[in-house]
Image (cartoon, rainbow, N blue to C red; front, side, top):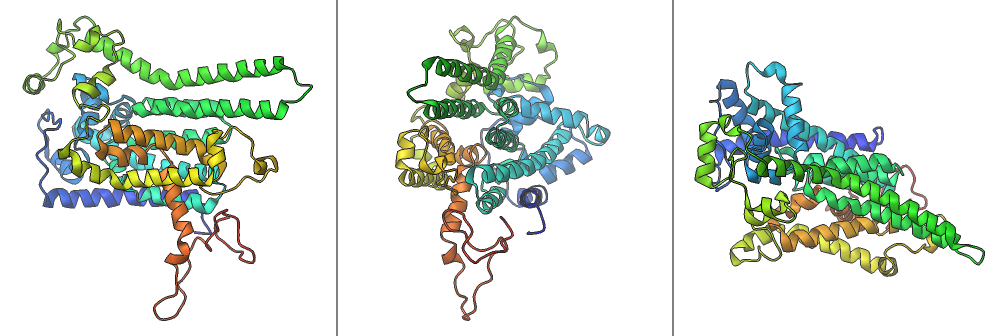
Length: 475
């Protein structure tokens, strides 16, 4: 490991955990264990699959269940049904581009859906590799501890959410864009970061929350200027000009981040609430019958508009979450959902534990929202590790997502929801591994010392190298 760049090692680990491992496991277990007969979206296969399509379905079909059916259907036929609009367009567009571009030579062998499924596997493997590398670089910049950043990136590669990173879901693409945007923002590349955050909001709706990183960055920048420049000879006029400059920058970047969401809602309004387009002539009969059987609203139903079209703010996304999936505050708190709450218990406990640990370690920093200059920052020696000041905004972001997900969403999605949106779970887990490493690497049963990990000696809480212990492979 010492001979390789750590981000490359993380990328190798991510690629090794994705394409061969999950593809092999899902193929085996898909043959051994029958699928659960759930009342989920499952459109008919049109046209009939050929021999190579059947083989592709046998090998990769386990990665095309549940929400993956929506993404593949949208990539193949567009937003035909109303509830398809809960799934944002950038990921299906990427699948279609690869299927019609790089995989076009396979057209004689594989129909479009099979090529889309293969595109999903290839793209998600690539996005997972890039996300792991971006998470490592982000950790180096925020934690100021390469060893902790390396551990966090490796934990990302073996996360329980990894199965959704491999399937035809948008989590891997979102993680790649979100972690990359956070990394670029830490490096001071605001406009590139804003572009990546904007693309992320075109992948998943919770990308809108990432605008908070820019708002906090602008607030911290202004607070720092105010504290450094305050004094008896300081006038208020330059401060007001700085405030206007920072505020205008924040407004522009946040508007850019929200733009994909707004455009998609407008597209849905035009498609489902506008005048009839005559699309009913192009919709195959089996898909029309599926809409009648399941009560789906077709975009081609001329003259019949959904109820959300007449709302003051016709936002299809919130309507679908409310009507189709019953998403709302405490709506999931039912006795029959106890097993799903148990599924979400590990990530919920870990998230609250991380937030509590950070608050206990930095009470004043949290009370001042991290806007007050600390003594160690003034001396140019900020603390390193998970409890460093720079982690504050990430802890707030993760806690906000956790609270919203636990009380308002289907809790069984919390693992992939947080695992693809926030680095905090991986940073805190790496922090725990380092804190308790002395318990993990104890004397062997035969009285011989256990071999230390290849990443070098255990680092103390500050992540500073120990006295007299040089030669760590990660510095």
